[in-house]
Image (tube, rainbow, N blue to C red; front, side):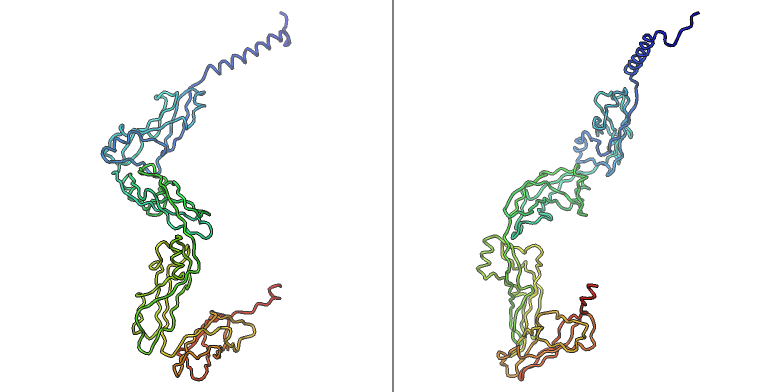
Amino acid sequence: MKKRKLTDNIPLKIMSILVGILIWVLVVNVDNPIDQKNITIQGDNVELLNKAYVDSANMMCMQDDDPDPVRVTITAERKTLSRITASDITVTADLQQAVSLDTDPVMVPITASCPGIAPGNIKVTPQYLSVHLEEKATQEFLVNVNYGDSKPGKGYEVGTQTASPEKVKITGPKSLINKIDKVYATVSVEGKTKDFTEEVNLTITDKNQDALSGRMAYLTIDNSKVLVTTKFWKIQTEVKISGEYVGEPAAGYRVDSVTTVPDTISLAGTEQALETLRQNDNTLWIGGESIDISGEKSDIEKKLSLKDVLPEGTKLTSGTSEDVWVKVTILPEGSHSYGLPSNEVKVENLPEDLQLAFGTDKIEIRIKAADGEIEDFNVNDVKATVDLEGMTVGSFQIPVKVELPEGYELLDDVSADVTLSEISNAEENNG
């Protein structure tokens, strides 16, 4: 028998290999095996169907705060499975198919569907969705308008903000309605000075001032958006404050002065309101019957609220305290209160390594004239001294020695607030 060589019939052998490859490709494409694919769907993406089924009983459904995910298992040809993603799958729970509405929680069957896949080839785990039935409630809430952290343009304040409508009705599960604290409409006024109207979405917060964003799907608002109108008022600076009082001090005493802290403020207001204020010497009067000095022999000081005296159409500018202190200084007849400049006070025994700073630019001294003619007194004739013997670094209130011209006397001891600090050495700082 003739022995065949490996190189015999090479074209035939090559053709056999090619035919084998072709047959393998045909087998792989024709034989498309059945396989399974698992896809996870988040529990809060399960759609509740036929909610009206329980609505007729004045009830509503709520899922758990953190529902379990649903695993969807699809059986199909491998090619088909490779094209399926989570977005192709719809997971629903039909309330009409609930096992019972009398249990808590209510167990509702879960079904899943996918285009091109027969229902029998789709399975879900778990098979039931846990929901809770709650009484439905409706309540009205005022719309609170604000502008957050934004700031209007220079020289202006937000005068008024109004919402239309001013209140809304919210319907939802009673437990959720009871958690609602406020309804907000927030608009930005950053850099703006002209009145404007803007449509904005509403924000709902609970008693802890946290947004109810994760539960909004269970709430129905008759107006989810409102129109907010913002009006700007111009700022008027250097508005003076003057104090008033009623009554008369005790016999032999008189009102020496009425002062306020602060003595000026800034207001924002409408053009008309600011013009009226200017016609009144740009002054706010505060006190009146709130400060009664009848029969008093000493100073009266009282804290009052500026909001009680603000003209209509005005408001305090942002950051301005509404409190003001009104002081009525009451002194005996023939006496007066003076401000002695701190830099006129002689300092004795100041240590060489320390420096002195007075807490105020003037020190109050109360003077009485022996003959009652206090008008002739000149504060420049006063000699005042402080003695710092033995004092160290720190802040102190120290006595002030006062020498007056003949014919005058001090009504009260005089003291001054001072701060002693070490003198900085330039060479040490540079070293």
